[in-house]
Image 1 (cartoon, rainbow, N blue to C red):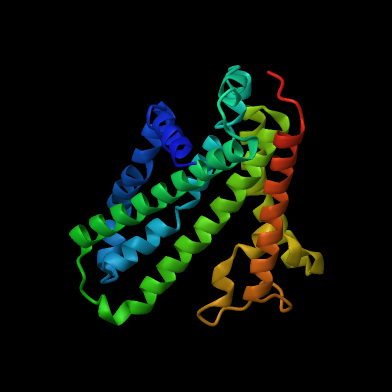
Image 2 (spheres, rainbow, N blue to C red):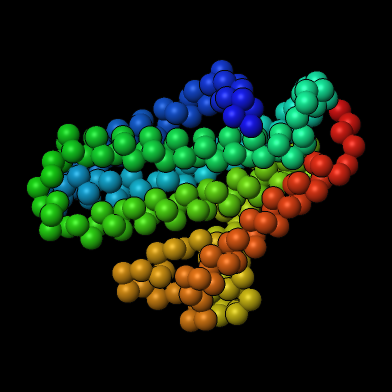
Length: 253
């Protein structure tokens, strides 16, 4: 498994899209510093205020993750290389898992990079004045990162499932992006109309901040444990469908 992950990382490192994506969050952090510098300073803000602004842009990482999740396996079908890979003494389950885990690690790298870039620029440009008095803000920022990573984790797993089932990268990416944007809108419509079925929607349960800092859940019946269970059920469904289609059907290229 380790050798498979190393091989997948090597292939990602040679991918031009991956190379460019590693520059997106640092460049975005610089742009946001330029646009919001005066606003932060006028309000006597510090590094944490700037980091909070960057944390609000993390959906960008979800889109990049969708791009990788939709192609990492479907391209093997389209390029005719999957059968060559399967000649090796590895199981289909291990191959499926190694590619999915590579995408999740890719997401993690982007989140760490975004956090490091925002902290470095924030401390350099805005300093630490008032940091101790706003300690709760750091907890809120970390919660934003946790929520963004949870959303990205779920949506790339969904996109990965679609790519395995349909073996088409463009379709998988398109459906993944539509699910990310449309899912949020549908969740908001359900909330406004007070439809109780909304408690089972994916994006109603990725809003982890609804359970902290005195916030009210989207639905009164929801709890943190309930959301974790619903997210777990979604994940096992997405990955289970991908596993079934990849392991049980014939590989045709």
